Length: 372
Image (cartoon, rainbow, N blue to C red):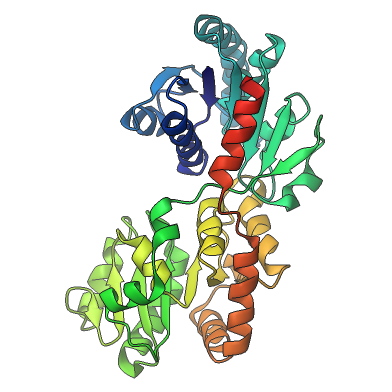
């Protein structure tokens, strides 16, 4: 059995594909798996590191602008797109896959379209509540469309009925225990823990809004708080040091550059504050956590806003758009949530009800059914 995966660009596309490919490899020893991506994005590092064969094509995305630079870039992209067709055909002809799978990113477009034309069974997975352009196009052509959340279906003109599979969640998160995690972190039973982060790189608007909140919480001790400034947030660490933090700690507050034990921190948390990427939301749902979501407005199709609203519309989370984000607004939201334990429990229950804990197996089963 041979399976071809096409994905790239961001970890949000690549990591779910790697999770599924790893699951298939573990449970089907005869499976041969090949990834196709680009040489200049993170898939070129992540895929080989995970032990999978990797081929590249040269492709770029279109820019939505009429500036001279954007127009020149788009003309070049058309040329790359035409050229990529023959590269895709060569890879598919040599590998002879039984099924081709797209996990998003513009690289999956030419690969899956070529596979369709060559009569290879095909499927795609959409991570976000608002699908990207590539998957919107592919949905009209492929054999199966898999979604993280049902909300995405209304934005697709799919050739075939869609299937909600959820999004793979890291196993260590699913295994983490709240009480054990709180004991490891030294959080008393009678205190709330707030966990906030803006992704691995950090988010300046969140760091700005959080600064005064963290200083106040360190003085009052009304709740425990762990905050990550991100790898680009070194300047904030200096600000906290100047404010009396020692090794990132003061009172009930801890400020880190990066959270490398996310499973423990999230398991222990009563409230999670952060962006609204698909992977983060799947983890929040899987662990049944209340959240304040601050969608990044800088992503394609504003998809993080739609991701967040999938929870908000089910009373499974709350939202503050970045344009409305201030220390006061965020502080008021935190206080309102933590002061109403019944509502907090309801939000946790609703978030948990959205979780699909066997997403990896569901996706794998669909891929294997097509391969057969």
